[in-house]
Image (cartoon, rainbow, N blue to C red; front, top):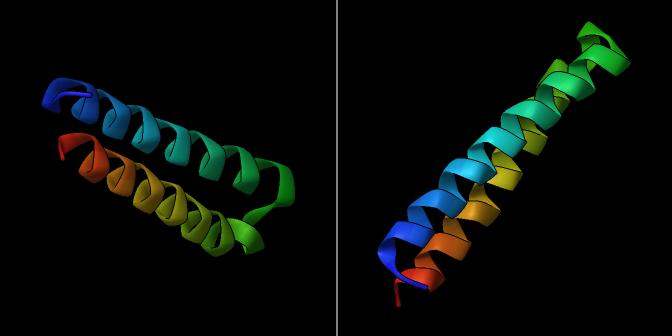
Length: 56
Protein backbone atom coordinates (compact mmCIF):
# COMPACT_ATOMS: atom_id res chain seq x y z
CA UNK A 1 0.00 0.00 0.00
CA UNK A 2 1.47 3.34 -0.99
CA UNK A 3 1.11 6.80 0.52
CA UNK A 4 -1.89 7.70 -1.67
CA UNK A 5 -3.90 4.67 -0.53
CA UNK A 6 -3.01 5.51 3.07
CA UNK A 7 -4.45 9.02 2.59
CA UNK A 8 -7.60 7.59 0.99
CA UNK A 9 -7.98 5.12 3.87
CA UNK A 10 -7.62 7.97 6.35
CA UNK A 11 -10.25 10.11 4.59
CA UNK A 12 -12.66 7.15 4.44
CA UNK A 13 -12.03 6.51 8.14
CA UNK A 14 -12.76 10.13 9.02
CA UNK A 15 -15.95 10.11 6.95
CA UNK A 16 -17.04 6.84 8.57
CA UNK A 17 -16.32 8.24 12.03
CA UNK A 18 -18.32 11.39 11.38
CA UNK A 19 -21.17 9.40 9.83
CA UNK A 20 -21.25 6.94 12.72
CA UNK A 21 -21.15 9.77 15.26
CA UNK A 22 -23.98 11.57 13.50
CA UNK A 23 -26.14 8.45 13.24
CA UNK A 24 -25.49 7.53 16.88
CA UNK A 25 -26.38 11.02 18.09
CA UNK A 26 -29.55 10.98 15.95
CA UNK A 27 -30.78 7.58 17.11
CA UNK A 28 -29.88 7.87 20.80
CA UNK A 29 -30.62 11.56 21.34
CA UNK A 30 -28.52 14.46 22.53
CA UNK A 31 -27.17 12.90 25.74
CA UNK A 32 -25.11 10.37 23.77
CA UNK A 33 -23.34 12.86 21.49
CA UNK A 34 -20.20 12.78 23.67
CA UNK A 35 -20.24 8.99 23.44
CA UNK A 36 -20.64 9.20 19.67
CA UNK A 37 -17.73 11.65 19.45
CA UNK A 38 -15.55 9.27 21.45
CA UNK A 39 -16.58 6.46 19.09
CA UNK A 40 -15.69 8.59 16.07
CA UNK A 41 -12.28 9.41 17.60
CA UNK A 42 -11.63 5.68 18.17
CA UNK A 43 -12.48 4.95 14.51
CA UNK A 44 -10.22 7.83 13.47
CA UNK A 45 -7.36 6.41 15.55
CA UNK A 46 -7.83 3.00 13.90
CA UNK A 47 -7.68 4.62 10.46
CA UNK A 48 -4.56 6.58 11.39
CA UNK A 49 -2.83 3.40 12.60
CA UNK A 50 -3.79 1.60 9.40
CA UNK A 51 -2.40 4.50 7.37
CA UNK A 52 0.84 4.43 9.38
CA UNK A 53 1.27 0.70 8.72
CA UNK A 54 0.50 1.31 5.05
CA UNK A 55 3.35 3.81 4.77
CA UNK A 56 5.91 1.31 6.06
